[in-house]
Length: 386
Image 1 (cartoon, helix red, strand yellow):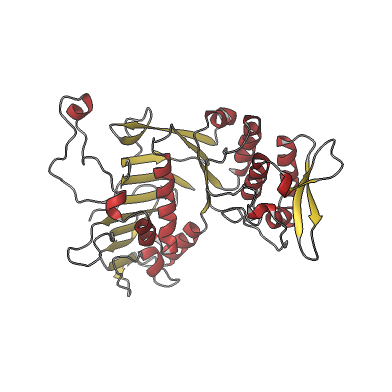
Image 2 (cartoon, rainbow, N blue to C red):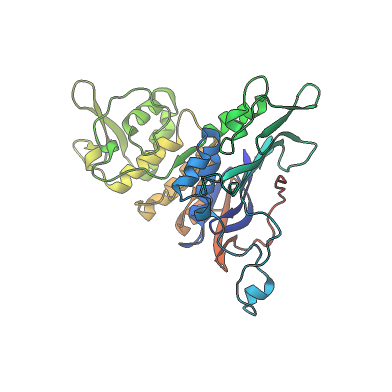
């Protein structure tokens, strides 16, 4: 499980480290930096997919995503005695992302390209590090990348050796130096990171694919847009926890249950039986909120839970009366995978109560900088040195 997340130099986040729980709710007003924290998790996931540099390019390149304020904000700047202004830099310009847990930790440091490279907006990966445990140190470091060179610590003797692969500035050691013989730990971490799951585009509009008839093939993982909802729900009933699914639906809509209706030779439409109705309501008839809740149920009760699931504003389109049921579903699902929820719903946080599983992180802006409310100093963290 990821227990710490560290971000530095990304958009409104100058330098932040937070503790994570089995279920972490990130909240705050509009513009407080919730989206920046969410995007940083997506970028870390892109490391394992080999898409980190391409994803940053889609955001406009390194110059568009770097922290826009001064390297340090002095007490005089905060008090207004002096204007906010840049000073002589003591550290190189960098975007840093990292996470750690009880078993592994990883960090990447991206910087400006070499002058004259011809790709002025293309960031370069300067340093990467992977280690055992929560906090980086020389004794627990087992993989390090500096420029094109990757060195690995052998598990048999503890000696350092050079990887046979020299990396380009846009390649990560997680994808290019991971193999069963020369980088087993990198390989294991890469596969775990590739299994992270993000839901931020679940469609519920009237033309949403989830409302159309579908072929019900085994679908243990709901698509990121929810397009295969019918197949995912059917798969949970077939090989997953069908009782938990039925309970989650009944918890939100008392007396209701899932229904499947044949639609053509090979297609099925999902719907809902409701008290007092003579027939099930099909997906095309369900409200946006009802359909969204079913999408969240399908995602959270996946028969193949990921190591990490990240939900962006799951409460959208949900009536406040559904939030207690969603909170109970989140808490139950946090027993099988770690969940991070980015939300501005105070009602959802209240519904979670004081559960030991859950942790709330409230973000706020201070001099344009995203900070954790009430946190003066974050948990210990060490970035690898360039």
